Length: 360
Image 1 (cartoon, rainbow, N blue to C red):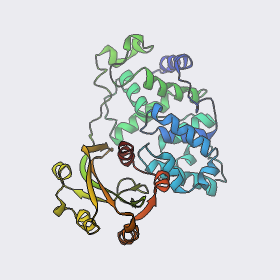
Image 2 (image 1 turned 90 degrees about the vertical axis):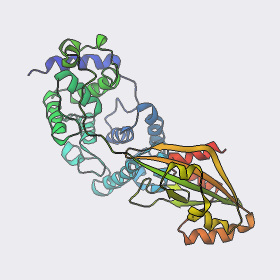
Image 3 (image 1 turned 135 degrees about the horizontal axis):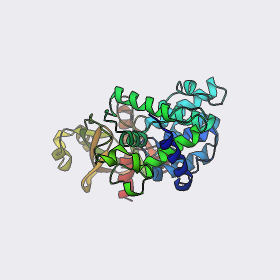
Image 4 (image 1 turned 90 degrees about the horizontal axis):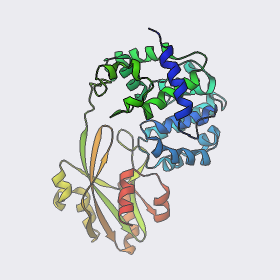
């Protein structure tokens, strides 16, 4: 199988159609690494302002490594998939501690870094050091599957290996950086998931999917993610300008972020029409003689990869003089009280941000 036609067309297409993005045109591995981590499972339009903020606040990997984790999470706030932020911080520290502040200059060593998988390692190795190792992301799977007529499941281990092998056979030795940029950009702009403009595609003459009317069927992904629904009642508890907050622990969603105390229920009905006698926190807080108020007409919904969160919010207002008693109660529950300025500073899940913005 000859690949010269495929690679040449992509390399000609890329300079004409590529987007002007701030992480292009540089060989700085820190900038490339930062952009790739931010863009994992994130659209460019959403990730771009976060990238700019990170570069402004942490211009070097050493400054990123030296920052407190809370500041990293706060800067990441709203971007989702917070394990990326924690891995970003851990990787920066690893580079400073073990690599003297310089990124490894080859794919094999890059792959050893915390949170750096084959795709990110290949991106850094090819863009920064021009190592001929292929990037394989969703855009690449789609393009290779359609053009070469590959039916292997991209969600399977065997399928991923097949695509990775093919991608590394195609990549040109002399221009691996430009080629990797080109194939990803082509998938993002031209060979898009739904209704691509095949009539204007420079690869259309030899494209298997176009010739066989298989564009909508490829690539194949058979494994579906099981999504679990969860139902929360959050308590927004305030006294004298202070709010009770909960720092999320390990082994659940949003590790290291701050939300509110909550009751987790079993059904949508329970959070739409809360019954006080069934809610532990509701009963505990009643001893303070607070004013309760259910916020919003319907629960907020928040989608994660494996979970669907539905949340109602109960506003609990205490008299200012009860702040000390509330603080004592909160400490017994491993909660804490923060003022408005501190609440703004800490990293919070997007769901909590939506609620806070809703009640402003």
